[in-house]
Length: 356
Ligand SMILES: Nc1ncnc2c1ncn2[C@@H]1O[C@H](COP(=O)(O)OP(=O)(O)O)[C@@H](O)[C@H]1O
Ligand SMILES: N[C@@H](CCC(=O)OP(=O)(O)O)C(=O)O
Image (cartoon, rainbow, N blue to C red; front, side, top):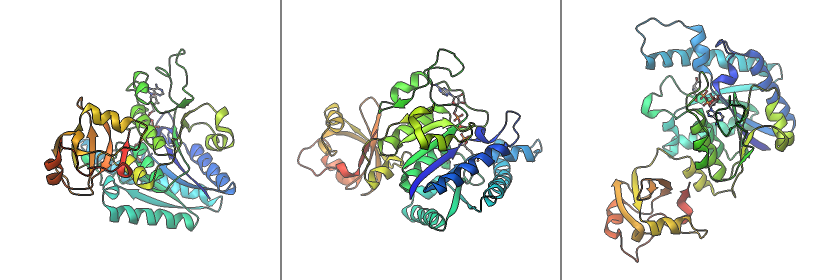
C-alpha cells in the first residue's frame, strides 16, 4: 500500500460566505475512494471544525475568544464528521474521528497509542479523519496549526507524501494577487529565501498562514517525505497530482534522502525541547559540512535550560539562529563539565541529530 497524508485547510471546506462547501467535501471523498482503488491508503487531516461551528451557533456576548473556539470546534466537529461519513458511505467507505493534542506527541506512550490507533484503522480499511482536539487544547498546548499536525502525522505514519491543500495554487514570488508574482514549482532545500515572498495575509479561517506552512513543508521534505502545497478548491487535485504532478500547477518541496525514523521524529519535535545549546562557529561549520558529524562538547559555548539523558535540545548558533534538534547522550550536569573541552563523548550523536 502507498500511504499518503492529505491535509485540508478550513478555507477549502468553506465558501466565501462562511457556509460549509458540501460539494468540496464530496469531491475530496470521491478522490479518496479513487485513490483507494489505485492502491493508496489515505490519512486525512481535516480543519474546518471552528468554521462549521461558527455557522451553527450564535454565541452570547459574554463568550470570550477561547471559549468561543471551544464551543464552535466541538459543535462543528460533529457536523463535519457527519458530512464526511455520509459521503464516504455512498462509496461504501467508513471514517473514524481521531482528535489529538500536541501533548500526545510529547510522551512516547501517547505517541505509540496514537500510532497504533491510526495503524489499526488503516488495516481495517477505515479512513482516519484527524483534527486537533480544539475543545481542550488551548494556547501554549496548541499546534501552530493543522499543517504542523499533518507533518507530525506524515512522519509518524511513514507516509510516502504529504499534500497540504489550501485555497491557493502554491507559493508565489510575492502577493498572490499581484499579476507579476510567479508560482514557485519546486523548492529544493533553501526555505529561508521564501520569507521575502510571503505576506502575513491568511485565508479567512486559517490559523498559521503560509510562512508556517513553508517551514513545516521544508522540514518534512528534509526528513525524506515530499510535500505538495496545492489548491484544494480544484476538483480532483490530489488525483491529478498523483497522475502527473509535474504538470499540475502547485509547489513541491523536493524530498531529501529518507531520514531514519529517529531523525524524522526529531524533525517534527520543534517545541518539545528541554533546553537550548549554543555552539561556536567552528562547530556550526562542522555540523553543516557534508560529513556525518556529531555535536561534541568542545563546540558548545552555553546551555540554557536543563535536560536529562535522552531529552531533546535545540541547537543554536551565536546569533541565536536555530540550527536543529538533537537527542542528548547524557544530562546537563555532565555536559557542563565538558563544555569547551576536547576528548568527551558527543552530547548529540549524528544518528540523533536533525539539522534544518
Ligand atoms: N507568497 C505567497 N504565496 C502564496 N500564498 C501566500 C503568500 N503570501 C501569503 N499567502 C497567503 O497564505 C494563505 C494560505 O495560508 P493559510 O491561510 O494558512 O491557509 P490554510 O487555511 O489552507 O492552512 C493564502 O490564502 C495566501 O493569501
Ligand atoms: N483545528 C481547527 C483548524 C486549525 C487550522 O490549522 O486551520 P487551517 O489553517 O485552516 O488548517 C479547526 O478544525 O477548525
